[in-house]
Image (cartoon, rainbow, N blue to C red; front, side, top):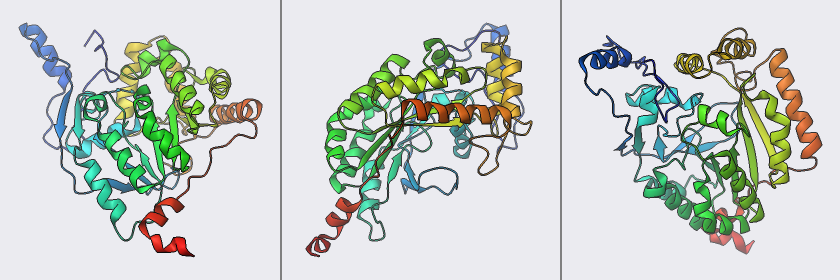
Length: 355
C-alpha cells in the first residue's frame, strides 16, 4: 500500500501466528481489489461483545510492578504502533496489526464479575490496576462507561485501585476519583511519550492530544489524586531527547513521580513497527531501528526478564541516567503514596474494627 492508512498506527495487517491455514496477506487482497476498482477496506472500527467468566487477572511477570490487572476491553483503538499488547490479540483469533485497532472486544459484564471477585472470601484487598494490557479509557468508553461502572464497584468496596491511561476522558470520572482519594485508594498513571504533537500523531494516532494529557495531570493533581507519569516507551532518536523537558513539565503540573521503559518490539510488533517506521519516518527509520537493537543485544525482540523493559548497553544506560537526573533535578523528595487496603478489610470483616 503506497498511501498511509489515516487514523491508524499499524499500516499493515499481519497474519495470526497461531493460524496454520494462512495463504495471503491483507496487502495482497487490497492490491487485488485496487486493480479491480473495488473498495476493499472501510477502515471502520468494530465492537464485539465477549462474555468472559473472570475479569481480574493475576500478573505473573516478575518485572512488572503490579499484582492484578483488569481490562474492560481487548484491542485498543488508540493505535499506538509500539504497543506490547498487540501480540495478545492473537490469542483471541485476530492479528496484531490493524485487527488490534479495528476489532475491539467489549466486556459488558465486567462490573458484575468485578464485584464477584471483591466479594469472594479469598480476596484480601490487593490493588487492581485498570488496565495492565489495553487502555480502559479508549474512545468507546465514552459511550459504554464500563470503566466508570467498575470504578463505582471499587469505591463501594474501598478497594485500592490503579489506572493506566493516555486518554483525558478519565477527567469525566473525577467525581468518583475525588471520593477515592479521600480514602487513599487511588493512583493514576498517565502515559506521555512526547511533548510534540507531531510525534504523538505519528506514534499514537487516536489518543488524546499532548495538551489535553498535560491538562489531565494538572487537574488530577489539583484534586489530590496522585499522578505518576509514564514516559513509556522511550524510543532512541525519536523521543529520547525529550526526557528532561518532559519531566520538568509534568513536575510543574503536580506529578509525583516519573517512570520509563525502553521500547521493545516483541513478536509481531517488530514487523509492524519497522513497516510503520519506513513508511512514516523514512529518513530516520534505519537509525532508530539500529539504536533500538543496540538496547537489546542487537535484536528488536527482547524477552529477558529484568532487561526487556529497560534494555541494556550504552544507549539504554544513557536513557536511565537522564531519567535519574530529571528525577533528582525536578522531582526531589517526591513519590507516589502507598495505597491503603485497610478500608476494604474493615468493610469485608467489620468485626476487625472492634480490635
